[in-house]
Image (cartoon, rainbow over all chains, first blue to last red; front, side, top):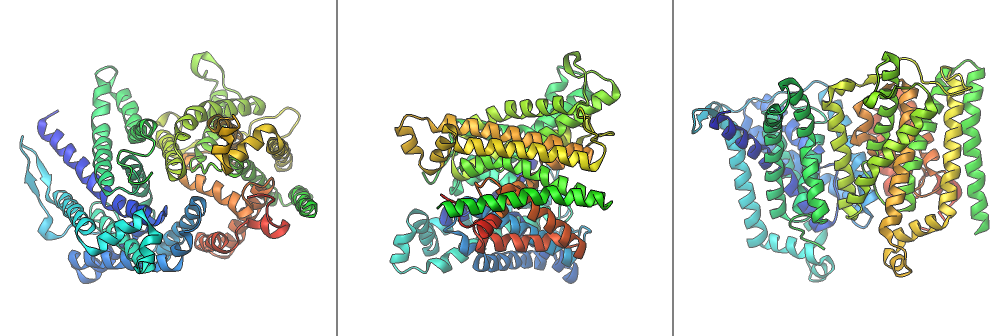
Amino acid sequence: MSIALLIEQLLNGLQLGVMLFLMAAGLTLIFGVMGLINLAHGSLYMVGAFACAAVAAATGSFWIGLVASLVAAAAAGAIVEVAVIRKLYERDHLDQVLATFALILIFSEGTRWLFGSFPLYLDIPPLLQGAVPLPGGGRYQLYRLAIIGVGIVVAIGLYLLISRTRLGMRIRAGESDREMIAALGVDIRTLYTVVFALGAALAGLAGALVGALQSVQVGMGEPVLILAFVVIVIGGIGSIKGALLGAILVGVVDTMGRFLLPKALALAMPAAQAGLIGGALASMLIYLVMAVILAVRPSGLFAAQS
Amino acid sequence: MSAVVSREAVVNTLLALLLLAVPIAASAAGEPFYVTLATRIAVLALAAVGLNIALGLGGLVSFGHAAFFGLGGYAAGILATHAFNAEPLFFGLPGTTSMPVIWLVAILVCGLVALPIGAISLRTTGVYFIMITLAFAQMIYYFAVSWPAYGGEDGLSIYVRNAFPGVNTAQPLPYFLLCYGVLMLVLLLFWLIGGSRFGTALQAARQNPVRLAAVGIAPFRIRLVAFVLSAMVTGLAGALFADLNRFVSPSMLSWHMSGELIVLIILGGKGRLFGPLAGAMLYVLFEYALGGITERWQFFLGLILLGVVLFARGGLLGLLAGKARHG
């Protein structure tokens, strides 16, 4: 096992983590501010990917597609918030789970209706094609590095938005006392719609970015959604910082587990068997990590709310 | 108050008789498909009755009960495969095609798995509990997908439906009656639990855990027992479901299944004795009727579900039999 391979896998883990952060940031914001558990977040990720793929295919430009993914996901988020989600804030988590589960059915089947059952493909834009040399002799896809870069920019942008702007101040106020901020004359309904659309746009961005690495298909959001839930539960629901650290932890642990566990087991048993057992264990690893963290700290690493 | 109770009892009896009468009539008319449909209703209702112990009585929103449903199914599939191939299981134990043994194994396995999952998950509450139960179920799901010994992603076929002494399980109607009998027994059990000291404590743990602790009953232990019991019942349903389809696959363990089980309860009426049965009837009929009209039935199912959650709180039983006696 060379150093270059190890670095490559670490970068892959980081890229997965960054992508999970884009999903988890929206989820955790929506939960923190509105107290809503949104299973349909993965559908917004799918909307972003489909919008990007369709617009990029029509215009020939990935970048226009990327803008379209942000617009489409934010618009879908805003519409869903006004039509459905708004009625769920006062309900218990059970109703929220169920209503957003119904939304997944509607989004998935609706997308299949519009685009058919075959996956769409999205090419990496020419600007970001190619690879860069790694220390130790390997090469790494430029596009994946760009995703990591986008994630870092979004993380800094979100930090500045929440800690430095008036909107961010209102979001924080909404998190700690929603009656009070409403009494102070802030239009809380619009604020909620804006926060939901912001989270949706981030999910759509993640979908579009990943769409160029995988095929764009119905149901693509669900595995990511569940990983994003693991992230926010590990990080502490409502905490953006927790989402960032949780996402990177989950991304790196998952990728390195799949890479290293079979190799580690191969030291003690025949290679074929080690591959099987290692692969099975690796796919369970992040859930084990989550169980251990929750067993020690039942409200996550950086719980924002009690 | 008593009028409401008796009205619910009438509705319950009618539902139970309806589920019994339709397959018998269908079988007499030579329509075995409807018998299978009714069996599907009975088995899904059984799984949801299991979840209803935790969710309805205890207020524990487990989003991972597919884990137990699938484990029960795999218990049936694995035991039958070993018996079919005449290969011993672990420690040289033989496989079996006897349903009572399979059921016992399914129940025990689910209980043993639910104990640690419940013990860890119940340290958390609210959304965290929903998420952690989901995560445990995903863990088992991914294990089943990536472990090739029992079919991995492709699932596992049961070539001949397992046997029950004195019942010709290969025929649709006898198998339906068997499943129906199990469902009725478990509903009786649910009713007994609901009225018992344990059931009262469990409902108190949902309504006000602090007061329950103040009278000297630890909510954690009550909830853990409920969670384990609930997993056992859902596991039993899983074994029956595998035998119904003569097939078990990781889709039984998927989070969609967990969602569906919750949907059944909400459609029927949360925490009510016959809620899961009413919900399962409605769900399977939707699935069948919409599936006959349009390929896009899931789209409309989503709309209907959304409508039920937003506007028809209390589910079908809430409509038919009035509000539940206590929330």
